[in-house]
Image (cartoon, rainbow, N blue to C red; front, side):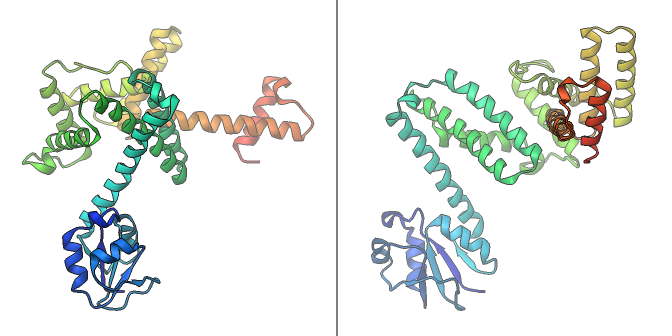
Length: 335
């Protein structure tokens, strides 16, 4: 299916780009999806309803979001602007709408009016964990929902800054884009990184130069224990102090487990857990996600074991440990 898709901005007649108007007026047959009369008047041509079929050489016009969705379903169609710019505009509209909702809530919702950065941050942390859990499940719909929740947390925190005359969401996003560009010299500059490990080394080197401190300068203390351990090890890895292979990390884990068996205390247990993080990093596995997935599997198996026992006329929680274990193994094997 050939033809041209012309994006009209947000759909507001007053915001239709001049380039779109010029392209439409040169068109042979124009279809609209969806357009109001004001948009028709700005375009100055007769616009037919779009029914899903685009004749060769015809043009379909739509607000950016609808135009981008249509472009995804019509990979051979030409788009005005080009597909990359159209994607950017569609995303910008969605984020801007979310920011508009946040600003509206600050004015009209009693609860939102009372919030400060200090009261919002605990919810932000909670949403971050829920994103991690959603990623662990592999459920795309849930990931979309949870990422949306976390995105709104950032939007709302940016709204609070804007209200005090500090940078707004757009300025924050623009500054962060500059930061990412500066920390990816292998993409935007002359530096070379042939692997993901090399990229991390460059990242940590650049961050260390920006911080102007030691290896562990400005380590965020608010991280979870696993995330803090992972970050500390990455900092050490950036200066070459790390295991070269997963086998070396596992050997260290075995050593720490042996020390724990010989002296069971919090210090030795901490060393074992820290060594587990090193193994996870060498295996390119996020230990936070790995532990969450393991905990979820354990929960599901215990609940299944309890149900199996109940179906057999027994109360699982009152059974001896060996019988509980038998039901657990049945649940684990999927019986």
